[in-house]
Amino acid sequence: MASIAAAKRLLVKRAFSSSVITETANASAPSNASRMLLKKASIPLVGQSAAMRMVDLGKRAASSSGGPAMVTVRDALNQAMAEEMERDETVFLMGEEVAQYNGAYKVSRGLLDKFGDKRVVDTPITEAGFAGLCVGAALAGLKPICEFMTFNFAMQAIDQIINSGAKTFYMSGGTQPCNVTFRGPNGAAAGVGAQHSQDYSAWYGSIPGLKVISPYSSEDAKGLMKAAIRDPNVTVFLENEILYGESFEMSEEAQSPDFVIPIGKAKIERAGTDVTLVGHSRNVEFCLEAAEILAKENISAEVINLRTIKPMDVPAIVKSVKKTNRIVAVDSGYPAFGFGSEIAAQIMESDAFDYLDAPVERVTGAEVPTPYAIELENMAFPDTDVVVRAAKKTLYLPY
Image (cartoon, rainbow, N blue to C red; front, top):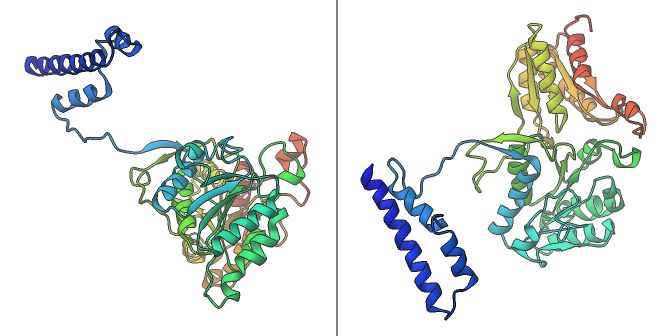
């Protein structure tokens, strides 16, 4: 141990001495930097710290603590875009306030400084205009990421997304791909009124030529964003404003720049045997909380995080229903012609129908424009208690 301490002192002494010599050789009078060095002689510099680690027992110069890390959904999306922009110079980001303001929700924080204003582009408030520009850029071989401040505003650009984007590959006989990723917050937030609270998963899920992604966790957000950017099709990436600030454990594997989640693959968040709870985005959180409550009553709920609306991982749902014999579809969209309706139809049309011991149960948003008053808004969307009651209903228990 004495030799290690001596080695550390020697490293500090040499690094400090060389710094002072270099500084004084370039100026006749002590500079501010020199005075700072003299004042902080006992504090090792970055390079010194690395050298010290080399002489510590049991450590190597390139060693890392590794392991899982807590990462917000916002930062996971930011990492995904930064990694793909580094990997492929044809990828660029465009949208309102994405550059100088770092994004309305700070998802693009730091990207302008890193990649410059040629690849991180602020736009006027004209969704139809910049969405069309992104489609055109994709048809020319670039890979744009088009951010909508909210997907409610994307209604201004619906013609560009569907008619110009989603249909071109088919109408060109497969000769003209259109690799564009439309992303932004979707669904209800809190107190933003009827025009800013709609869930578009069923809207876009009904359109041939679109791939529709709705992630839940930080790993979902990162892995699926990277997959969307690389996919040659038009992809609609539906985020959730409330989830942006939530932190999830991200595995060491997911922290790698090579981490990608295949589009169209659901994830079993919790295994169970009595009832299947399937949802996407923030509704997965309600399903997991409901499963915890049900477990206290000896009810084993399986939770499926669908992750992708289209293509939907129907085989994963069918496999789960064959095991549990019951299913609850949880969605914050409107009840008519929605996500839960599609799942019910898929179950009925598959061999899973013969395994059902109860009708498919749907949990949805209310058939009403989202109220602004918080008390009414809370009643307009699913929550944990509603999911618990729906699960008990499939089990013919009091709810």
